[in-house]
Length: 209
Image (cartoon, rainbow, N blue to C red; front, side):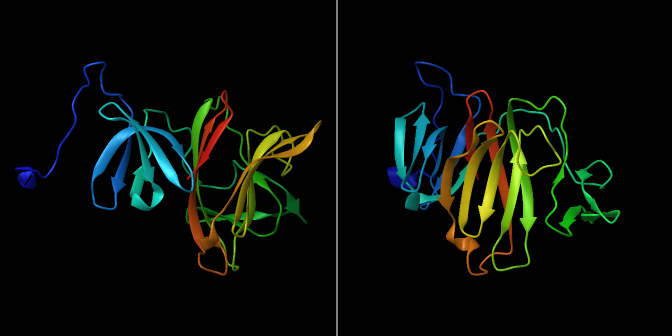
């Protein structure tokens, strides 16, 4: 009977092969589902599967979500030193320092790094720690000026429990792309976090994990 089953793994569908890159979703009852991640919002996740079509899953049912991991090339992993970074100096003193694999801000001056031939689709992952009750920082990417916090670029802005992405242009100004709230960043609940920003430049799609 079904009571003797511990696991079922779905094989190739009659209409086509199983996709190569799949997201995995573990539910609160420990079931594991595989499929293409279609959408995710505060209420539900939509998973496109080759065995049951599109599944609408309530967020409260999801224990963990692992996005599809496609083969790629690591452009940069670090930091390992300070010399290759671009930063301002005050009284000939660097505005940042390097120690034990991390960069520490000594003031509010920006720091940047240029990556040649960055792919159109890229995952930007970084760890951030803060000493105050809430985080407050801006991370610009796809920018044309490493000396300024804003220019022709996209920017991920974290200010307390508010997180938003904005597009900045010298000609048209700044416009918001999306905004969300993360209550755990308020009232000193967290002092560090890991951010992963998935960027699809041609489609202008951005996903924050």
